[in-house]
Image (cartoon, rainbow, N blue to C red; front, side, top):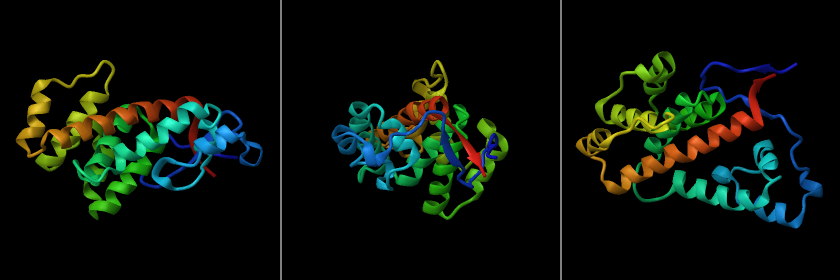
Length: 191
């Protein structure tokens, strides 16, 4: 029996869909085409197979996700991952938080940041630069968003240029979408 994971962790749980995913072997041509690009270009997961029920949206979503999270210019990859973690903490998406916290740790070789976030949540105290990135993403991810002009100015004050700030907005926003898809279509489990 699978146990639902409710606490934030850097051990990535298995995501279990509520609906039966598309069977790759019997998928339509449109579904196969939509699955050519996958999030992180990591292969066809149960999540992708579930999203393939709507191939038109999936065909747009995965390339957009990859451009936002893995673009070569702008915000550092680790900082995009921290933005994703902040959004996932606000939205209580344990699965996405685990995936992107692990990526942040791997990119930075620092576990202290994620340990602080998972221990203290939105009250975590981080280095000034990372704190402003985390705070902005978290405030942008609330419903309704709490981010204000002063939060954007704080990003500039710690050295983010306009492209980097835009990348943070986009990475936070795509996780507002991803988190909600994860919640409504399945749940994180450990076996």
